[in-house]
Structure formats: C-alpha cells, structure tokens
Image 1 (tube, rainbow over the protein chains, first blue to last red):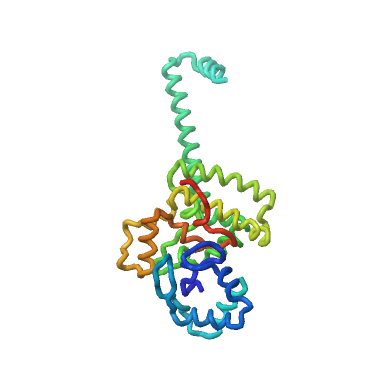
Image 2: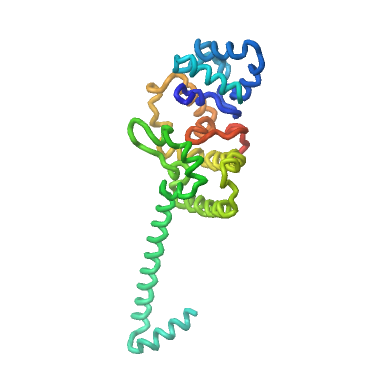
Amino acid sequence: MKKSGCNKCHSLSAKKEGPPYKETAAKYKGKADGEASLYKHLTTNPKVKVEGKEELHDGLKTKNDADIKNVIAYILSR
Amino acid sequence: MIRQWWQRLQQRCATCSRVTLGLGALGIALVVAAVLLAAGAAGLAWTNTEAFCIGCHEMRDNVYAEYKGTIHDKNRSGVRAVCSDCHVPREPVAMLVRKVGATFEIWGKITGVIDTKEKFEKHRHTMAVREWTRMKKNNSQECRNCHHFEAMDTEKQSEKSRTRHERAKAEGTTCIDCHFGIAHGEPDGPGPKELKIAK
C-alpha cells in the first residue's frame, strides 16, 4: 500500500481526500460483493470525486493477485 | 557572598589596584561563561543526534523502527531527515522551549508511561496530537526547513500533487495537515485537519 501511495489520500481513520480505511471497511464488510467491489476499485482506475472534482483513482501498483487480496483483507479488517 | 569574595581577593593581593582586580575578575567570569556556553551548545547538539534519540527503547523499538526504510530514512539521494530535523525547531528560542518541554518526558520515562508496546499504542494518538499541534502552530516549520512551496517545480509534480498543493496554498493548510503518518505508524483517531487549533 505504501508503494502504491494509498496513504497519500487515505488514512486509517482521519480525514484526508479519500475516505478512511475504517469507513470503507464499514461500507463493504459483510456484503456479498464487498471484496469484488473493492477488487474492481483497486484494479481498474475508476473515476472518483475529490473535493467536487472528478479524477482517476490510482490502482495498486502490484498485479499480483495474492497481494491485491491481501490489501483488500487489510482494509476490510479495519 | 560576592562582597566577601571581593574583600578576600583584595587582602590576598594588597598591592593590586581595584581596576586590576576588577579586570581579573571580569576575565575569569568571561572564561567561565564561555566554558558554560560551549558546554551548553555541545549538550544541545548531542541531544539532537539520532544516537541520543534512540537511546531509550521506547523510541528505538517503536517510532524509530517505523521510520526505518521510509523516504526520510532511505532514498535515492541519501539525504536523511533524522528525528531532530522534524521534531526540534532550528530557531534558538523555539529550540530551547522544545528542549525544556522534552525534559518533562523524562518523568514519563521514569514512571514507564509507554514502556511496553501496548502502552505505547494506547498513548500513540495523544502523543501524535501533541506533535501535530506543535507543527500546526508553527506552520510545519520543520518540514519547510527543507521543502519550500516557492521552490517547488509544479511541472515536475503529478497532476494530483499539483492540484492538492495549489488547494493547500489557497486554503492555508499546512504540510502536516496532509502529510501525517509518513514516517511513523498512523494513530487511530482524528487527524491534524480535524484538530481545532488557533495558529
């Protein structure tokens, strides 16, 4: 996550440009498509709104499936 | 006490004039002051070293271990920012105030407030808020000792960085508002932006 620069916009629970990991976890935890939604979000550079402006969300730098799932597990465990 | 000492000095050197004795005493006082000043400066410089900061396990095993390998520790150019570069002001008065404040941390060391990993984690947010508050009050001066807004070549920044830095300039936010938790583990709780601090 450090290598992909996730923490530039997201933090554990504090306010930054992106939602905190805890907020994301609360949104997706326990949902049937939670993991799949996060997987898509982290690998397809979707458009996101930052301070009212649309920008592309940077994906994870790694293409390794196990690493990506590790990141998702980390976020969901917050 | 000074009068007694002066009288004793006059008795010892009955042939010396008051001016000679006065100059002699002034010379001694200046030498003593210079030695004390040099010792004080050396002491302050010593307490700014990385070795001093990680002299206790509370720092070495927690925040220092987290800092290792971060961009401020290891990077392409080999320029490092050690503990004091970020946490001790360079300006003499501000530095002395910080040093005096730091002496109170000795009490924490004696009483073992953060002497285990669990205790450290319990106090991490409180300690971070204290440091964020200090940095917000001085407009992240320790960051700005090296990173100057005016010297930033925005053309070399990514579009996202450029947009965010321009917004920070316009809104008057300070470095630590966004760049927190870059050298140490991030505490769980409200961040610097959520702190209501009068500058």
